[in-house]
Length: 141
Image (cartoon, rainbow, N blue to C red):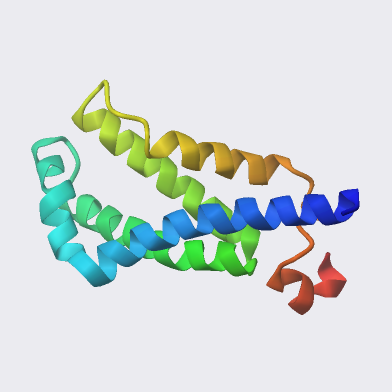
């Protein structure tokens, strides 16, 4: 395997792995539990903080749907930059929320995602050759 192929395979794997992690998280929230149940399980306690209820509900829906949709987009490599930016906001919201509720909290779910996320952002875009963006927007790349 040449260097270009190895880099493309590594990027596909990294992007797909992060996408699967997020997509399955969103899938569970939307189709297995439903967002209202997720709200009652994980977001209800935020009502005791300074955050307004509408913002808490909005965050529950945002994180659920962004994880599902943008996770899928990362897997196939469509609108990668936008998907990454929305997932970055998701990671920041989740980190803020966990920190707000429990100042010293378990980072085991955030850190692996953050490492994969930062890796994808730092690696040159040319390395990520196997994606739908390349097929659809060949002239723009």
